[in-house]
Image (cartoon, rainbow, N blue to C red; front, side):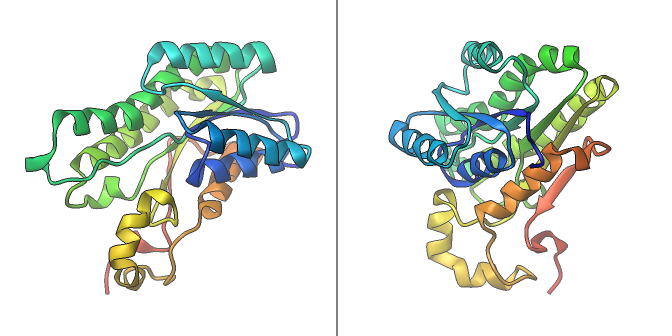
Amino acid sequence: MKLAGKTALVTGGSRGIGRSVVETLAAAGAAVTFVYQSNSQAADQLVSELKGKGFDVAAVQADVRSKAAADKVVEQFLEQRQKLDILVNNAGIIRDTLLIQMTEEQWRDVIETNLNSVYNFCQAAYRPMMSARKGRIINMSSVAAHFGNKGQANYAASKGGIEGFTRCLAKELASRGVTVNAVAPGFIETDMTQAVRNAAEAEIKKTIPLKRLGKPEDIAEAVLFLASDAASYITGQILTVDGGLTLGGF
């Protein structure tokens, strides 16, 4: 197993891409703890399913927007698992609307959940990983950071910020053996994209060279690669997993 003996902390792990990341890392041998915001039923169900398969998985409720909460989660993680090998910052939301109609609350909710949470958990994990002189940090970006979409100024800004943050942190931690990368998904079949898919799935597929939407597992496998020893010489990179969407053209 690729991650036997490794420990992993995943934010936003109860559903969608995060759930698939938890399942994939656990199946690869990692002891995984995931953070969820409020859906305790989904979190408990996932823990039960994976423990039933013999995997070491735990869930913790926390508000990823809170620095104090992130510090506490990482502190407790280290107490329980003794080390932190892999951090996956996946927590994210959308609050889509045109900028002229966007409230300050909609702006702040997205920036604080998507971008501030990455700062919160990376800073909490910084010293333990630096001291261990090893580690993998994988942040979740989006093709929206490159494209920009009408009604997604808040979301695109948060994901663009994550990419810049990823490159900076990669330079800071490289000398300590810690790699920092990001994965940028395209259109993925999740609850978050349901409304867009209901309105224009056929048209979206026409713009994707592979002619299909991505699945959460496609992203999880990219995360697994970056978390593994196979990616030990890769840092500061944005791995786009979008079926060719960002190639452009006709």
